[in-house]
Length: 255
Length: 262
Image (cartoon, rainbow over all chains, first blue to last red; front, side, top):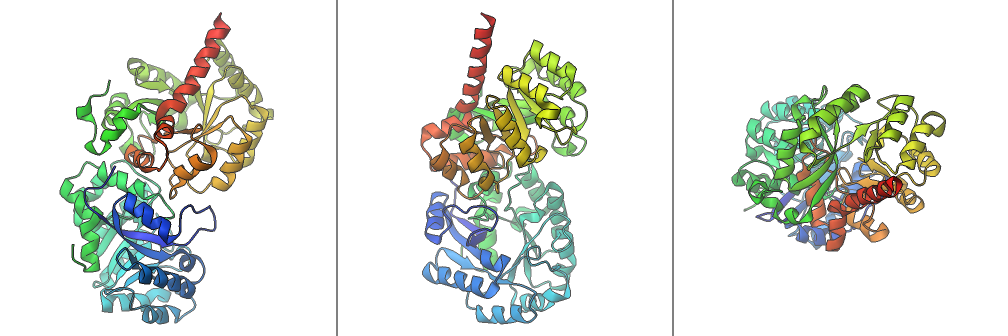
């Protein structure tokens, strides 16, 4: 089961997990799996940064993208706490990518995505037309997709990716509704819940240029998202856009 | 027989696997009605994904009443027994035990949380004894019982084949020791979807106790099939997981029945 074109994957990680064993998770192993599945580029976030330590985590990402600049893109992960650290991390790692790629994990960082703690980040993202990948979860008080529609409207030049599209069946519907209300919102299909017919619904309601392939490797198995796209009852044109072209466009790279 | 023309082109390799799905349901759903499928619709979806046969429960068993759901299951699967293997529900109540002893089915599914009973021997021991005596494959979803309750069940009934469904992808620190200690434990692949988790399992524990599961009608089989298709495991292991393991369990039970009937 191979995709028809090389994939640009908007959602990956570097690092391991506290609550379950990681297999074949180092960058060299990731590259082998990327080659197997025809994933040309993987945009990565540091798992250490998502859980515990942004400065150290972003430094891990720096090493990976320095070593393999053609295969990896790096998100700068920022936390709203301690105050001021996000701005310094954004400045320190601004060479990662232009436009900047920023990752927010309001669930693990226990801070509402629409709260005052993240305002400096949203200002920066708006100013730099950054791509901001936000972890989202169905109705979560810190990261529900519903919280992001007003943010997207207030900061219209930021391009916001709803990581996991809210995960659950209801979360997906919240994410679709959020994207319908703001043209700068994009949906990432990463997730462990492979809802039947949801790909078709997203394409029906949003058009395919707002949907992005994400794997969450080495958390989740990339073949999950691959199988969902390749077997969805949508046009080949839509599949190619989702697998590659939409994220290439967001990154402002050439196809 | 599956017609190649009905199979999604992305799944052409799957047609040769003779897939036997360990985790499917049919019937109306009060909570997820938009996704529910009746028997002909389920079979059409199985055709598209080259799934030859499936263990299928009825959502009325899970969501409403075991007796009423079992009746609907038998009635609605009757015309499709070449494709659908009915999975009846059971309760730790005397009429169920009597029925299971008199006419043992191939497979049952228990819902201890939804149906509000304990799987510990003091509560469901008689039912479990009956299931073990007849070698009935017993399906339980992970969310339906705690790990300690599962351990008791495995210890108390070491000859009862238990297929733990929907383990999730974060459970290996529980699953690996359990699989090593209890040869009667099997798992399905529907939610076993961490990065390279399937191939790691096969490397460490072998392929004999993994069963392909789709979680139809709620999940698309495309995901679990892609995980199996792209796992770096021997082709024979892939075929075991796709369907041979489940067929082997059924074969074992059929042989026991035959011996008992002589």
